Length: 145
Image (cartoon, rainbow, N blue to C red; front, side, top):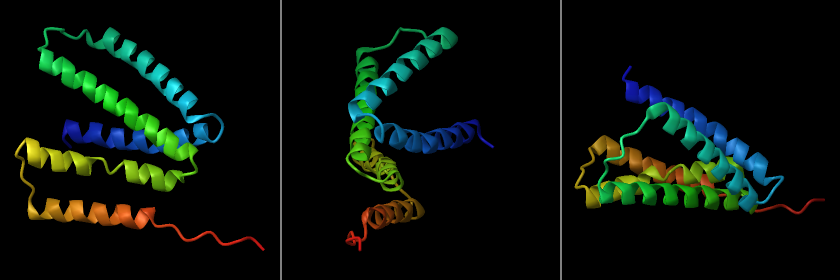
């Protein structure tokens, strides 16, 4: 197995568990408080990475700006997912929908990076879009007797 695949599978497992923990937290506290605890965890994890990795800081301005933008967008995405869960969204639906963000990445990679998809990859993207539509469909609420 390729090393990158192992890390990708680990990320899948960690983010899969995260969806449940986010819903559990937003059932008990506000999305803003959940997000702040999320940020504190990221600060602690960042400190651990700095301690272990000893990064080299000779980076260009564009790399730093892209990294900051990526972190900010990731944080805003996390916060809006907390808001969706707090607003009554089911974890099984909200997390499934927000986890389709790679489709936007694929579209941007095609448009901005001039990447190409194979026929099988295009079919996969279309299947994911169909899955998003089907997951977001909920039966109308029945009045209780």
